[in-house]
Image (cartoon, rainbow, N blue to C red; front, side, top):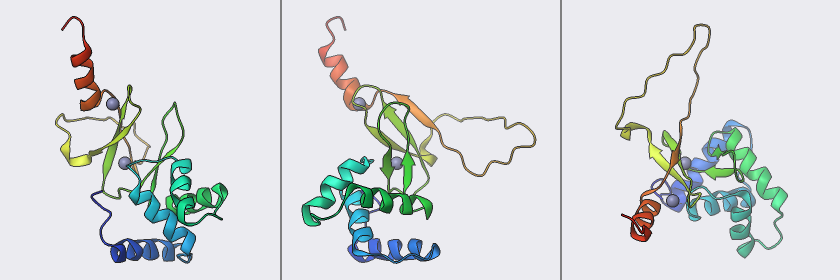
Length: 154
Ligand SMILES: [Zn+2]
Ligand SMILES: [Zn+2]
């Protein structure tokens, strides 16, 4: 993952973010955060839990949820909520949007600067935009390739 970095960098970022909310980087929080970086992008809480459990057998799913909530609150991690399916967690702190594949149900990061088409918005007067997020939906390159290979009538 692009933003995983060295162990020291990861711990540094965790400490810095937690200290803003007056929290300490407990071993559980550290492990949950590194597990999040180790799993393929956008795992569910359960997927993080399965990973953490391998070397912290006593940890509970509730603790994992708690840690993830804390990270979301201090801005270290983003929640990715899609209408269908469980909440996923995203540890990419660079500005980006999400692409959701209808077929494999994977969530991909779309760098904010890479948009090839200009998107225009008209925000009604009286609203102040603090942040916004675009969710793209469609087919990922892999699923598109599978589709054309298996197509009976090309
Ligand atoms: Zn993401
Ligand atoms: Zn796909």
